[in-house]
Image (cartoon, one colour):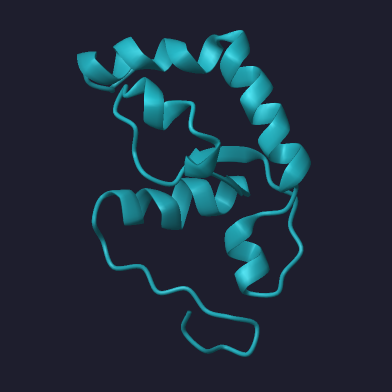
Length: 100
């Protein structure tokens, strides 16, 4: 599989392999085990991904800041959150169908 990320992104990808990140990830999933986006829609879905709310782009302070983390299901992380990060307008809905 070919890695299509920029050279800059490849350099900070190593942060995800360290013990410090693994411990932070474990802590985040322990305190927030359900997907934050799903909860807003009153759905119960286990979180699989620890996401950076604000993109860190290699900034260690943002990367390791627990307040900059949220738990998401893979579907929301790979879909809506990626579109949000790209500046696209994403409308999410609550359980009654109203926009959030």
